[in-house]
Amino acid sequence: MGKFATGKFAYGISDRSGFRYKLNEMKREWTGMLVGRDEYEPKQPQLEPRVKAVDPQALLNPRPDRVEPLDVPVAVPLVEGPAFRPTVGFGIAGAVTVTTS
Image (cartoon, rainbow, N blue to C red; front, top):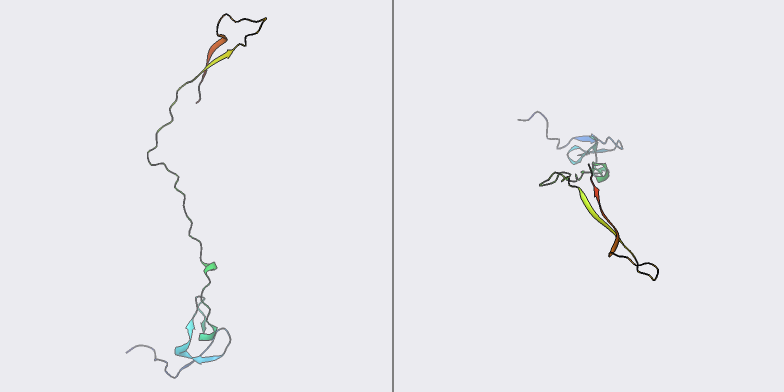
């Protein structure tokens, strides 16, 4: 046998309103209060914490950065005019090397 009676004819007092209800028809809320069926309120979804969606930040197959000099050819074409005749196709020629660390 169990420790408690079945409560077939027992009454309980609602923690919310103080009204009398049959004990076997009362419900316990998420706050721990014992209330009648008509007073019962389920827990609202706003009270549950949100599940955080974690963004992946690691790469699957990472490769180290390549350290290479960046060569950029530089040339300025000269415009041919009546008073100005270039002897070579380009007047200034050279290269610029850019290194990054």
